Amino acid sequence: MAMEQQTYLPEQPEQLADVLSFLDAHERVRGGRPAARYLLVGADEHDSVEVPASIHRAMRQIVEALQAGKAVTVVPQNKLLTTQQAADLLGVSRPTVVKLIDAGVMPAETPGKRRRMVKLDDLLRYRRQRREQQYRALLDTSVDYDDPDEDPEAMAAEFRRVRAEVAAERSRGGA
Image (tube, rainbow, N blue to C red; front, side, top):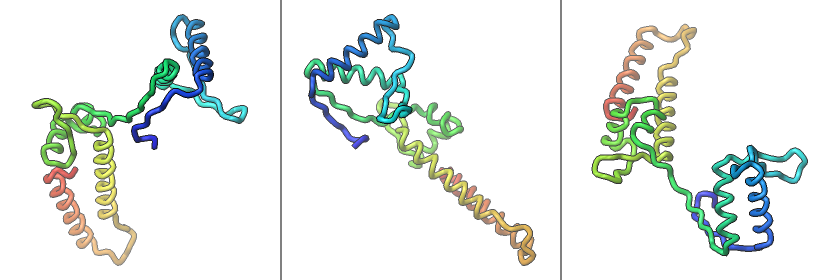
C-alpha cells in the first residue's frame, strides 16, 4: 500500500486543529522556521524517531489541507535522473550511460527530443544485475591454488575463457 496512490479524506477536525495549533506554535517560537527537531514518539519511553524537514513540510501541507476540508491524495512518483546523474551513481561516464540506453540494456524515458531521463528504480536494478554478473565472473575465475590436482595449464586456459566471455558480454553492452 505504501507505493500505491491513496486518497485521505478529512476526519476528526478537532484532532487536526490540535496538530495544526502545535505546528503553528512551534514555528512562531523559532521565527517562522520549524523547530530544529520534530519527533514521532511511540508508546515506550525511549521509542522515537526524528522527522526530517522534508517530511515535516509534507505533514504540515497534508494537515492544512485536511483541516480546510480537502481530500489529500498521495501519489508516489519514481524519481527521474539525468544521464549525468545516472553516470555519477554508477561511477561511469555519461557517454557510457547513453550507450547502455541506446543498446537497450538500461531503460530510459525521452521527454524531449534529445534529453533522456533514467528512472531511479531502473538504474538501481541495472546496478544490482551488473554487480551480480561481476560476482559470478569472480566466482567463475576463482580456484583453489593449493589443490594439487589442478593443472596450471588448465587453470590458465579457464582464466582466458572466462575473460573472453566477460569481454564479449561487455562489448554487447552488458557491463
